[in-house]
Amino acid sequence: MVTVRVVVALAAASRLYAFQMDVHNAFIQRDLLEEIDSELVVILFYVDDLLVIGRSLSLIQQVRKDLQDRFKMKDLGELKYFLGIEFSRSQEGIFMCQRKHAL
Image (cartoon, rainbow, N blue to C red; front, side, top):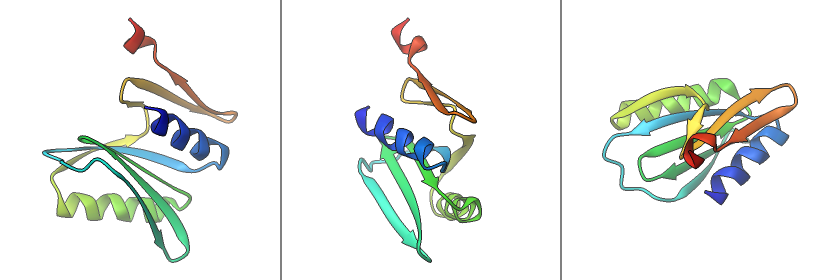
């Protein structure tokens, strides 16, 4: 949970795009950093949830498409709700709330 908050905080501070995906039957529990054409894409796995974060929107879209071609996944679009944390993006940054989890 701390890793998710740190990665999203860094994404907000660096004004990176963040998208989420749901992986069917995933058994991977690790973080991936992949550098493609000097652009950094962060892929954060947690059980069957996946965050794809990076600076280049076109590169992120390509990574998401490649993942869907290779694995059975559901694209959930921009980061909204991940591991019990609700996310809301504004000009000031990303607001994280665990109200639903607390209730």
